[in-house]
Amino acid sequence: MAQVRPRLEAFAAEMLGGLARSDQRAKGELYLRGLLVDGKRKSMQPMAARLGVDHQQLQQFVTSSTWDHVEVRKRVARWADDVLDPEAYVIDDSGFPKDGSDSPGVARMYSGTLGKVGNCQIGVSVHAVTDAASVAINWALFVPESWDDTTTTDADKVAQIRRRRARCKIPDGVRHREKWRLALDMLDQVTGSPADDRVEDRHRVEGEHRVDGGGWGLPQRTTVADAGYGDITGFRLGLEQRGLRYVVAVKGSTSAYSADTVPTAPAYSGRGRPPKPRYRDDPSSLTALALAAGRGAVTHLTWRHGSRRNAANPTAAMRSHFLAIRVRPANREIPRNADGSLPECWLIAEWPPDKTEPTDYWLSNLPADTPLPQLVRLAKIRWRIEHDYRELKDGLGLDHFEGRSYTGWHRHVTLAALAQAFCTHLRNDPKAPAPA
Image: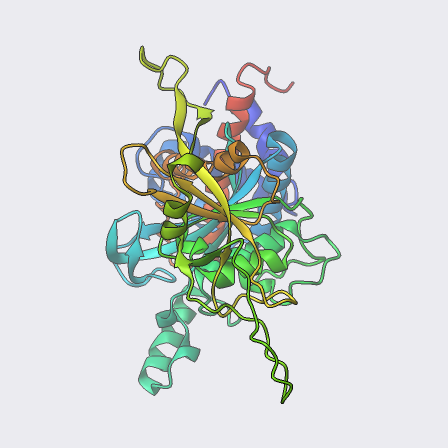
């Protein structure tokens, strides 16, 4: 820390420069330093002890001071956009295990962190990524139905929920909203222009913090997500409606037609309304369509080079076998074309030679002339999220916040993401001289 502190102070001054008061900027840099110094636990008291300060300074800054964490996120996002030149935005979520029931949004839910249903909070995040670097740029705390008094008519439950919300200072405008909708909200915030009024409910992303003047003005980029999001037709349609390209994981059981299957109409009898074209057969599954394409459609390719080199793989090439075919996903929610046909998109499937059928599937609305290596590289770029969460949780205390404030949670994860951005800054330019 002694070696990098001048650079940290300069970086913090840039990222926290929107905070109105000098004491807030100083405490922000102090909290950031607490997240970065050695030590297993990064909650208030252990950090304060390592820093040699009263923990109430940190607590007051995060829970009750008047500063806008959205402004900090915006600066981090714009810094990442300039420095990393991201190839995609990756959507994901992570569990924050909790022992009690008083933290905002805590409930018994499935958590990938736990690998089971457990008592936890769920945070949804947006990451700006390349194959070499990534930064978490936006966050939203998932609010379960059990924390929304508008989801029940039971008077006793309504009163209980309202008491819990009041204790955690959850703004009245923050209600239960599915994780995939939170993700779309955050993408709207990231990519919206400063004068963009498309997003009527933009305040839902941050609750009490409306994003005055519109979004952050970052470019639209390909969105990548796992099957928890990709399997939801509404999520894919939401991306389409926003003009966003995507590569999202899906289950092999997802219904679809092959691209050459077209709707037909029976001959018109001359009476009544002419029959409309429609698909006469039931759709297949993605697995069936991939199997019908066969092994002859599979290509062996390398999508990136890792760091674990050995004698058998001296370049650490990440290789597998893939196919990509055009399909038409089938779902009642998907709008038809004028001729009654369903829109085409890419099906990408990973099919190792020792497996009888593909092991992984993705859908993508990237252009029909997109090369297979590009499709696969974007499908696989989600690996950066595992790096991000590991660094944020194991090293930077992302899930160590013990406060019971909705705003405090958002501020803590914002500062943890800022700490991660600083680590990325050092990795990108480790030998740069400290600022004068």
